[in-house]
Length: 355
Ligand code: CP3
Image (cartoon, rainbow, N blue to C red; front, side):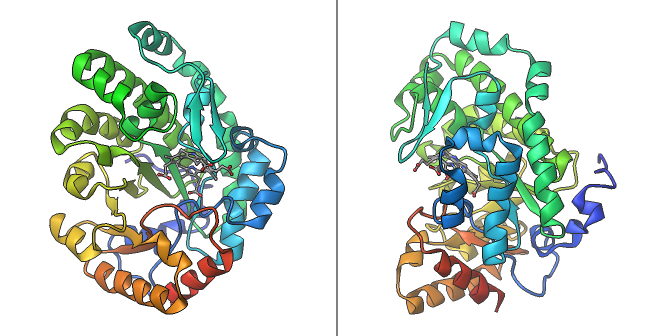
C-alpha cells in the first residue's frame, strides 16, 4: 500500500472516517451517505451562471471554475461527497485529441480513431507530456478539497470501453457498430486502442487521488451494450488496467455501468471494491448476485425526481430497505441527475435519506 501524504484530506481532514468511506468499506454508519451522479451541472442555476460563455471542456480545465462547480451541489444539498467536475473525455483532450462536448448531444470527436495509423499516432504521444498536461486537474482537485475539508471528494474517469466507443464512433452511439466491428475483425487494434485509453484514463484517475480525492468511480456507462463473453474478452482486462493505477492506494474503488445487471460480477472482477447499480436491478438482488460481500451504491430511478413526493418517498424507503441487505450502502440515483431536475427535490431527497 502506498501512503497518501499527511496533507491529503484522508489524514488532514479525516475523510478516511467519513460516512462515504465507511459505507464503502462495510463499516456501520449512523446514517446512509448520499451523493448524486451528475449532481454538478445544469440542474443548478449557480452552475448555469458560472458556466456562461465558457465551453464545457474549457470549464473543466480552468481550476478555479472546476473547483467552484464541484463545491456548488455540496453547499446546496448537503450531500456526503463531492464528485470532481470533469468529463470522461477530458483525458483524451489532454492527450491531444480534438474533442468537444456539444450541448444536448455529448462528446463529439473531430477525427474518429479508426485505422492502425490513427492508433499508432496515439501510441507515439508522450506519457511525460501527458503527465505535465494533468497540472490543471491536480490544481483543481487541490482547490476543491481545501473547501470540502471533511467532505470526501470522489474522483472519476471513464472506462476504456465507454471512452473508446466515443473515439471510434465519433460521438454518442446506440449500436457501437464501429467499436464492435473493430473488436471482431481487428481484435489486435481494439486491444491496442483500449490499452492506450486505459493508460491515459488511469493516470488521470491517479492524479486526482494523489491531489486529494478520497474515493474513485470508474464509469463504464455503455458496457451494457456488450454480451458477458465480449465483456470478459475485450473489456474487463482494460478496466482492470485502469483500476490498477490506483490499486496501491487506500481509497475505495466504485464501478458503475448502465444496463449492466448481467455483468455485475464480471465488473467487480475488474478490481472494484464497491459496485454501482442502476435502477433496473433491486439492490437486494444485486447483493445476492455478488455473494453478499460487496458494498453497493445506488439506485433510485431518476424518473422519481419528477414524480409525486409520496411516490418518491416510497421509492427512497425501498432503496434504503434493499440496500441495508448489503455489507455497506451509499445512496445514489440509478444514473445521472437529469438537467431539468428541480434542485429543491434533490435537497429534499438528501434530507429524507439522512432522516
Ligand atoms: O457527476 C458529476 O456531477 C461530475 C461530472 C461529470 C460530468 N460528466 C460532467 C458533465 C461526470 C462524472 C461525467 C461523466 C460522463 N460524461 C459519462 C459517464 C457517466 C454517465 O452519465 O453515464 C459520460 C457517458 C459522459 C459523456 C457526456 N458528457 C455526455 C453524454 C454528456 C451530456 C451531453 C448533454 O448536453 O446532454 C456530457 C456533458 C457533460 N458532462 C455535462 C456535464 C455537467 C453537461 C455539460 C453542459 O452543462 O452543457
